[in-house]
Length: 350
Image (cartoon, rainbow, N blue to C red; front, side, top):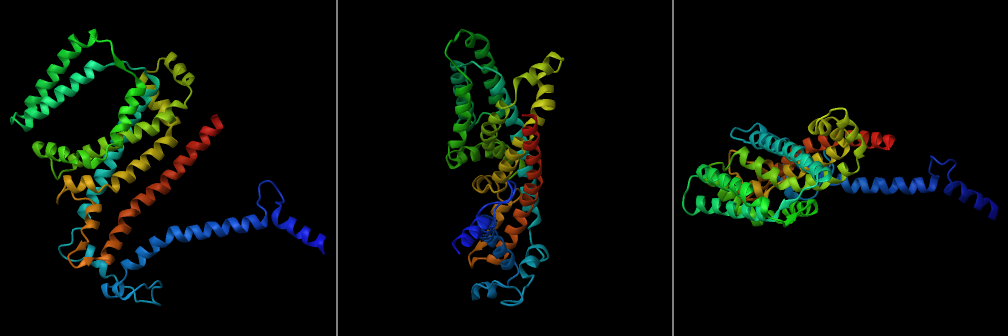
């Protein structure tokens, strides 16, 4: 009897081959995965059924099963897309334009900056940096305090900075290197956006760009650039330098090497970074709240606006959240394949 139990226990706990799990560990693993899937997917299910409820059904209490606990209704969807005066499409298009444009710009500029920090050694004169900050402060004070036209102030500041670079900078010795530049870049992300949102607001107000796509795209790009640089730096550092040196011996330019060799090899990192930055830009609320009012309003602002004087409109809010997360989910599924292909190719080449 004891031998029988021991044999049964071995059959349950020992795999028949290396590529298959034993029955008992497999059962426990799948049970844990199913339980966690329920935890993850239940909020989405709750949003879905709430979007098909009437206000009285939402207020009556938790009902989980359509056609059994409650009768589904298209009230919320009709209010958002059919009712005269509804304005759902415009914020949706604004979010698409702003998030995609800022993500593409941040990924492109940040990737080039990360590659430069990995492959090029910089020695930036500290005095030149301080001179730039002083001149920039002078331009801001001149525009805001003395009412100087920003174009004139910018031209004067640029000319003065060129003069400093040509005359004083070559004589300075103290310099900062790549590590200092990397730390400065990431420190810009450590700084809470709420600290700088008021100066950004005043700047775009003076430029006449408030409530425009340009203001949101420029701000989102600047805010997310440090993340791109920090993430892509490690991907570029893992690419062998020999490949680039061989291409350079064959006559390839630096930009040609970046766009034909480096970026394709780092496509897994590009896909992951692009997705992360897109999610951050898509869900950004604070900056959109300050920089847009009506014309450039994005989806997070529209969702927050459903908390009206009568209380949260959970039915319309659920419908808005569903259509808001749909593009991100679709793009995530698409980029997951690109990430997997990049990882497989990198493993084979390694």
